[in-house]
Image (tube, rainbow, N blue to C red; front, side):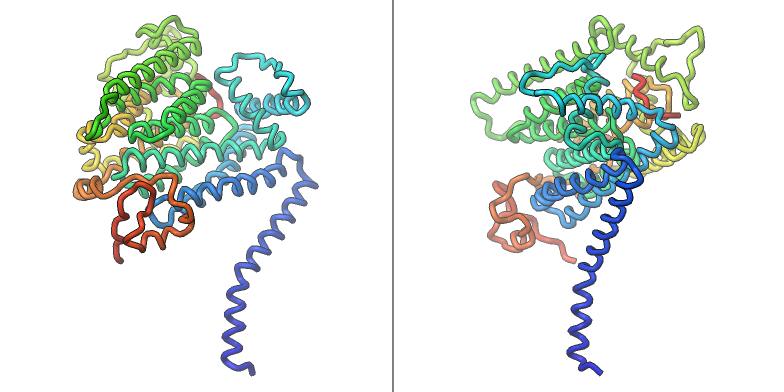
Length: 508
């Protein structure tokens, strides 16, 4: 019989070897699946087994840096879980488009046209110039084809891999929304917002397909992140706003206008610094002028996108009526127009706004579900409605925060305008997919701190920054433990630790 000391040592070695054995098993299993997939499937399928690990390898160190600069514990695990789950959702999204709907989805067209463009990019001399005819205008569908072609030029034309890449894009958009909240609304319940924005089923599922939704999520997140930096007077704000707005304008310029309107209101209401330089008023005037010019350019882009003359009320009414007509088809239609009124006009009366908010954010109701997809969506909408009702005491603080925190002004204006504009969609399936463009900012309202803790958190907390002192990556715990070592560059001393119907078609 072995001595107790040696037996204990063998048990210790066995426990240490368990993670290694598990890792080896996973590697062997992955290689086996990879080889079988190469033999029995095409690159459309087995290419995803190359793309998924590459995306994780690229994303992991970035998330590690974000987590290292974050004051809360367990952030890295939460972010890694969110990224992994977001990539996994690309597979059910693919099955919905190509199994449930038999390939009758926009993703199929983007894949085919993107593969052709990728082949052209691989065989042509890029330095001699690119002369490729899309057969359509670049704005809108054409731009997504270009993005898909560029992705395939890097990864190769793999359909499932394309779903993974676009899903990955959507994740970074959600991350930027979360970062924007931390910067511009530091007293908010950041952890609760992270759980909502990273794990809400709609945000996991819909922006996980080759198409406009994932791209819009990325660019809207970048725009919102730039807005947060601008309101907090941080460097690089205009670059983020310009890139994000350009990305959304190339696909859905009307959404860009909504974000621009929210930014204008937020910038006017933003809190002025205690010490204002002599050039402060001039800088403010110039910034407002630049933002105004950007909004006007976006309005012109919207007019060209929808083929309307001007940007007055009649043009807006025409766009809304056309949207309603084009979405009044399929088995998930609501408010079906009559034959005599195929393109009904819409009143711009603000009194319709409460109904529009309820319709866009909380429909379909369970009794309106016409299929299993709508029924599942209605469960999420009902749960979201219950959360808003339960958090009504928090929401009563919004009017005061609208003036005190200009990021709340940006959020509120964008949400209200979005609900007003998209209430004309008459198909519940399409509305469920389009709604993801507003949900990240709607969830900001659920992160408003409770009244009893708002005063303390407003004075105590500061938003985390991207950069920390050299040598601090992975040493957050040691830095927090030292009273004489700030946790981040230029920041205050860290607070003491506590104890203890097919929605896959773009119909407008």
